[in-house]
Image 1: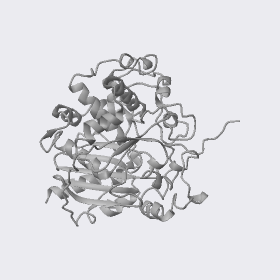
Image 2: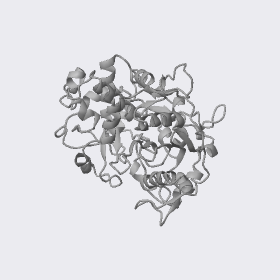
Image 3: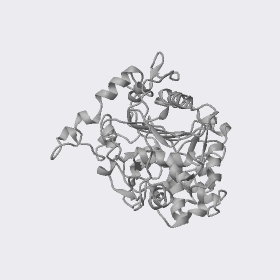
Image 4: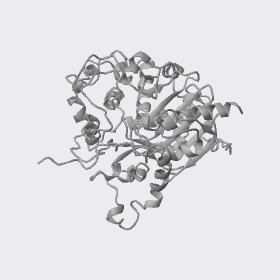
Length: 432
């Protein structure tokens, strides 16, 4: 008898009035995890339990709690901030942003303009922060998320691995034309074997692998299960990756697949002898004056889920984004080579990106595990399912970081009420 999986880590319900438009605002208020008392009590009542083993950690509305509490659900490894001083973020809060209005993109569920404040609820925001010229001009938290909360970043995690890989390429430690099978022999016979490092970094690999967030049987579910984040056979991410076969021609087109980042994490580990946890700590967390440690979920073999298992605070994401906005250096210290920042900003090939069919991202591309807009401001972003985001706008001198727990996984569900919001606040700040 085949056992039905109770929930999957990426399964999304069918969109309805509660996940788009005005209904989403009411649903966000009703699903506020602080109102539900998840995991409260000694012990918590059975109907308030949130667990990986039965899939409830990924069910809505429980995920509104779990995304701020993954360290209570699965094993994690610490990304140490070290013993250095905290780099203070100046605060210059403005009282004119909540009332800012903008017109959402089509298919938002809204008939006309909405306010910035309403958009936060419509997007099931857990926390959002706006930096302008390095100062916090807006910061707000919802539910059980606060300034010290390490919130699940999902695919924002990818951009940390991608940036480190680009740094190692720039310094000559890695060759972007090297074949994956040569870098990690265990992958030589897999679909990744004859792909180049650059193709992995830019996700132009051709693989028999599905990242359909609306399907409970998609390959992304198998990956997340192997990582120990969904009920099933936790075989370990590096036991699962060699099973992925090739389908097509590497380098022909962009196709978003989380497994690329976990291959990248394996390459980084094999090349440097250091885990992704250690690399992120040494390259970024110990150098940027972060307030809190970050963390990665780890599987039963101790390997990180590099494609989506990182948790960090909103302010520390902002510190990382501000360093990028400033060209890779901050307070006189070079963190990322300027050439790497420039390479991210230039982006990849929009012609290879277009066939992926992202209707909310026309003319965009993907480079070094970053999404690149090619707009007039040269904006680029790290994006994670259910609302995680780092947005860098060099022209507006602005960085936005957001944490979320939307009932639907894909960013296309909330891009219509997010992307125009970033443009509106950038223009507003530039006006003074």
